Length: 319
Image 1 (cartoon, one colour):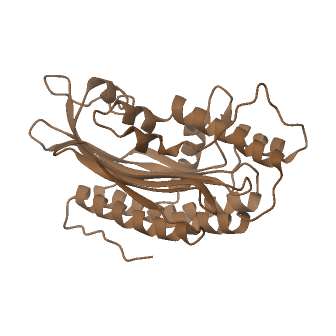
Image 2 (cartoon, one colour):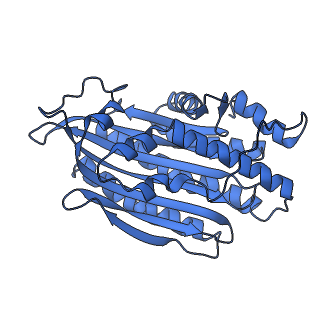
Image 3 (cartoon, helix red, strand yellow):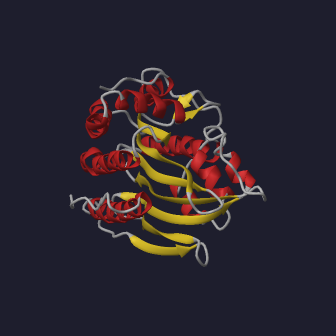
């Protein structure tokens, strides 16, 4: 792990941008140790003086069917439709006379889909947001994000390991944070129309400004640092396990659930698609390359597939 790039003498937005650029490099290098392919960069821009980002994508590798690690640093104005996506937790946002509002946002978002159905999918996103007054000063700010694990087959030791690493990342900032963020994750990643969580959870928080900005940023850095130790050992252990066509089909069904959540419920997807100049390819990078929907499919009681569904329908305290 490289040294921290945080520098309290700099504005939070500058520190966060440095942090996500550093973490994108570290995470891609870490994931490449498990694959024969390298991530390919794709730079994009929202236009003049509106920011942009860098997508790092690995497709059809030896371990990962599709993996993306994206950063974005964007600013400009938000229309009413996008503002409404934030109003649930920011009812006091003051708009300009035209109904728009100035903003700055930066963050890193990644989704990793391995080939092997015994190796879990993982999602991570950490972001910083500012709403600006007409004079350019900061009206309000917050951090958000989290990391969650989505296996097709339940390995209890893997779920415990993933949760423990994120608990260890949060504990220095308050023993109450992990239990709170774990429950928040289970609630947020719920596919309500199926009454199933997307996976075995992790941590999630949003609209977070409980601490001073610098401490919030340090908490985000600590969570970033947990990613590789929490995930790499799981993939390394599972990526070469033998599997059957039936197990691959079950992975495809679970990926279908992943798509349902991202398109129907995810706040980030909805917000991104409503933001002028947003890059659709980067927003939808989280989608798996392949997925399946079978009509009225329910695994037989006592199978490993049914075992996974039990914990998605009744979230477990893994620690």
